[in-house]
Image 1 (cartoon, rainbow, N blue to C red):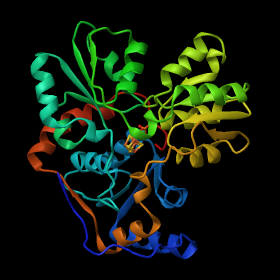
Image 2: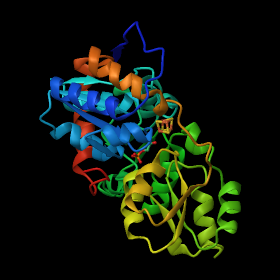
Image 3: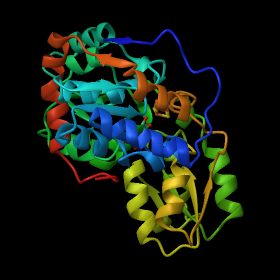
Image 4: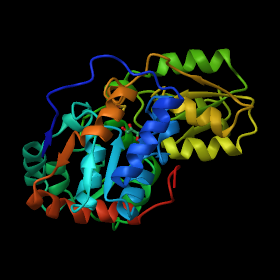
Length: 335
Ligand code: 13P
Ligand code: SF4
């Protein structure tokens, strides 16, 4: 994988006003570009995009889009996944430095060594991985369809699940599979949303629903709170970011505590304006997602940067695993 970063970067910040918005839309049309934004992007980017959604929804849209250019406002592995699915399209990310600490927690060499210890095991990798790791993978998943993906694999089949330990624990709990080995990786943002913090917030807001992303360090504690009756079980929901939007539209609660990256609050508040959504941890902001600034998006559309390239041989090997991922599970938010 390589990405060509432009040498000159916007040094002054751009004000995301109506003129900015018009210029972004004009340039996108001129380039025949579709703008995709993840739910963790800043509100202005979410609002100017053609589609805002979770990882699975955006992968599906990228695969189906007729546009010749995809501008991916998210992190690098997401843009790379779009390039794997659409090798003939131009894929741009407004700032190629937008990485992911979870994707960095396993590389292809480590995965090959793990596979060698478990010959014949099926490898399920979270989409938050590099193209090289996907090339060593049998089937990818996102948080919206990880349980469905694992359920689709025969029960006697040994599985290696990487790289997120909290999502892996959630999948093991949901499927009851003992033969699922989990890599000990984590996302620094979600791992930092911890159990004691959640318990304290839940005690202070006894009527609130809890929406918990399965990458969170507090996911196990949330189920413990439900199990011991501190919070009624039907109020605790472990959900992908797309699943949170569906649950937001359906909830009867007046307030919801949200355990995920804080960018998510914008879409939730739009989906259910009468509900009071609050972050369990309001410092849970992903600095990589926030590298995609209004100025960076403008520069990307003006200059055609940063272009994402994936080695064709790696992309070819990764494509089957990514295609299997987009075929399984319910549509995520944004589709
Ligand atoms: P989803 O959008 O699949 O819930 O993923 C969350 C995430 O952490 C992406 O980086
Ligand atoms: Fe990666 Fe975590 Fe940021 Fe998501 S929130 S992009 S998993 S570092």
